[in-house]
Amino acid sequence: MHKRLFVIAALAVATNPHAVTSAKAGGNINIIDGDTIRMNGITIRIMELDTPETFRSRCENELVLGLAAKKHLRSLIDSGMVTYEATGTDRYGRTLAKVHVGDINVGQQMIRDGFALRYQPGKDAKLARLRHWCGPDAGLDDTWKNTGTK
Image (cartoon, rainbow, N blue to C red; front, side, top):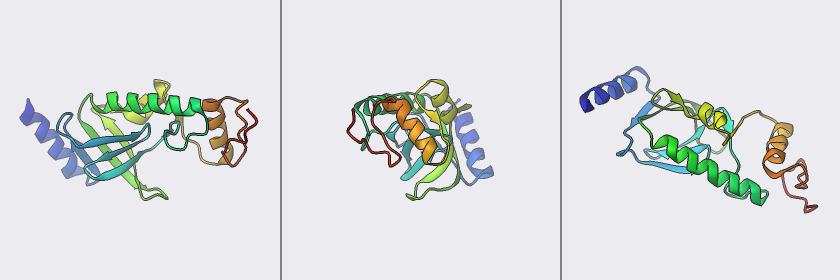
């Protein structure tokens, strides 16, 4: 069984130079937050989703939800063989990638499970996500900072 997994992993890397595999227990995967992992020394921002922040949260509820998203991502990552397909880098130098555990698209699963929202670009979309996590009365303005009104 282990030989077959190794062969499958080797084929995945050979056919796609951006695919990297890591065994469930033997992989060196750190969970940074609900949408970012560090795998084999590479920081990967999972595409398609946005999760609440755990660093510089705009409200207490965002922090609580962000920690829950991070914990859920850990459970997904620990459930099988992890692969990713890089598509580029973001403005912070992180690798943008679709991440899979077995046949599961991690980004889509996080959204389905209610721990993430689908990523949409733009200030209005970002503000809508923040208001979703912090509530409409959180006093957030379009600079995404808490204005202190509540």
